[in-house]
Length: 202
Image 1 (cartoon, rainbow, N blue to C red):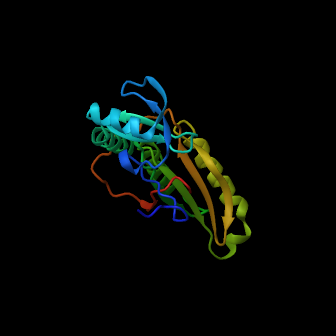
Image 2: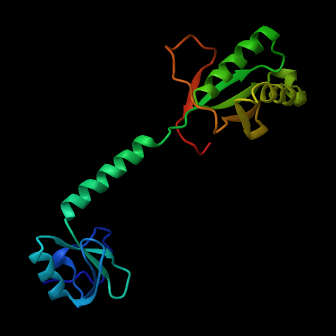
Image 3: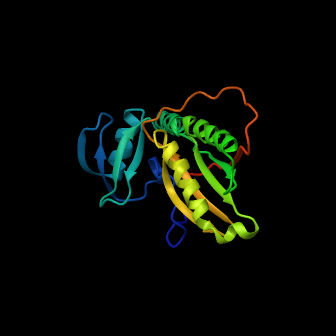
């Protein structure tokens, strides 16, 4: 029978006769320590108990093996993994674009959008778009972003400070962790409501 020596390391759990070592540290089905036994004896005990011999710590010397129902173990592990994925919160980054010389009515509309995004648990990338001579007045963008951050500070915080990016200036707001996301209502017409990325690495 060919051995795996020299081949790629398998990450798959080894069970029963795939465990090729002379002896193992055996753990019983209820977690009790049996001690170091010969592999033949461990396999015989597994067969007598109608269970599988499963290698749970291959890096140990000798490897640690446990008597268990491997099929049931795999099923329960898959269930836990699915539950864990279901409980993960998907962070969406929305984008809101403003002009440095925005009028007060437009500003209030944009601010309401940012508030709604934060209430729903989303991050918001706020972009100030400079045109022409406006590029020589970056302080207008800084002041506007600071004003917006102050206006929504009860719902969110500045995760990424304002920085120049070509003709734009960008700031990222994130919702406070203690703000419980509101259930989403039916989509209303929103100004520049652009989902950007579904990653938390922004």
